[in-house]
Image (cartoon, rainbow, N blue to C red):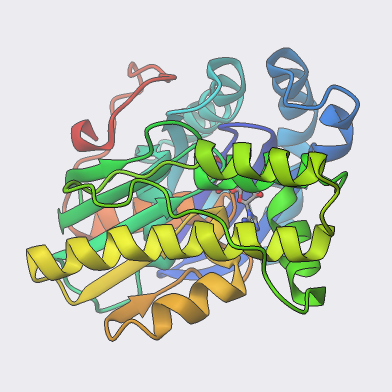
Length: 323
Ligand SMILES: Nc1ncnc2c1ncn2[C@@H]1O[C@H](COP(=O)(O)OP(=O)(O)OP(=O)(O)O)[C@@H](O)[C@H]1O
Ligand SMILES: [Mg+2]
């Protein structure tokens, strides 16, 4: 059974194909070069680029899988949250395709898709899921597919956003996460950073203090590798401290770590040492992509959750608890 998944929530066009729950093709057309000159994603440019790329990318995905549109059993797309103009392109394309083929359509929450990417076959809820990406740092209790409880979230920047901003302070390229990780490996030692929200009782996150500290250290002219390593260690320590405390308090022993930041090797090592059963997305599935959307739709279909009406619109704002 073939499922097509599309994600155009931000600046990447993602088209993925999943066959019986296994990722067969996962194509991502990056817009990094397009937005580079502006120092951030320009929403209107993102929409226009999605519009140019979506159809040829979908055709290429089908060709690589060696199937035609008629072979698709389900069509899915990210409904939100994200940039509305960008979302609309992939969402409308997928709805049109589902309608033309007469197949069920699944409107997928972007964070459910990130979680689906890290969710191994056979793992039954409940468990904890941390989504750490460019736009989110949210800790959920996953009670069932489609039933989520928010335990904590960032009060300011998202974790990935902080990696991107600190990378920029250091004159590194975008996205900043991989650049910081690479530079941190060159460091002999780490410059210490203060741990954010020390002593808090809840499960929130904060990264703006680390960013400010990085700025002060850059202005002092301290060496970039030691600075990158210090920032990375503090960011990871903060994520781990909050999540492990939540696991302790709630009694959960299983944790998924999803989103772009989950690709960080130092982070994976830290969480693997925590004494929990921890799962990360396979390579290529942590950042925005279409296959994770197809995976979420496939799980929803298999769990007997109904497809979405074609009259349902895309939405920039959509809490996961309401998905
Ligand atoms: N190795 C890494 N270490 C740390 N951060 C990383 C790494 N690789 C990628 N990232 C970060 O992940 C983010 C991109 O992830 P993703 O594509 O999931 O987020 P997004 O789509 O921008 O945001 P959201 O999913 O919240 O809408 C970027 O901020 C990037 O710097
Ligand atoms: Mg994302």
